[in-house]
Length: 95
Image 1 (cartoon, rainbow, N blue to C red):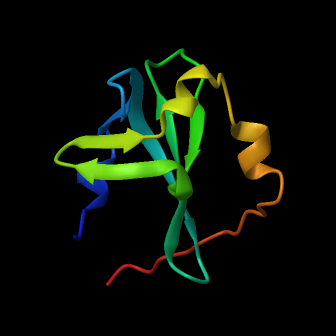
Image 2 (image 1 turned 135 degrees about the vertical axis):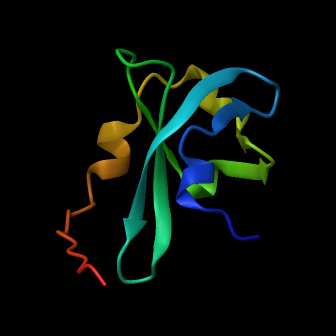
């Protein structure tokens, strides 16, 4: 299934049991494999963000990203997820 960035950004994120965690605000990609490494999820503008790895995704259905129930008790995974990731600058030329 192909999904556009516009479809993913703002997509609801819920646990399998139905607990609302927030909406996708940012997506991180691995440049070598061109794969999503993790999603950043927020409930609101001032809320703390949660970082959800692609391995924690149970299913992607229409407009809802379902994640493992264990994520409902996690306040923030930022340090765990980003501890070994190095940032790379990406530049895109206009066509």
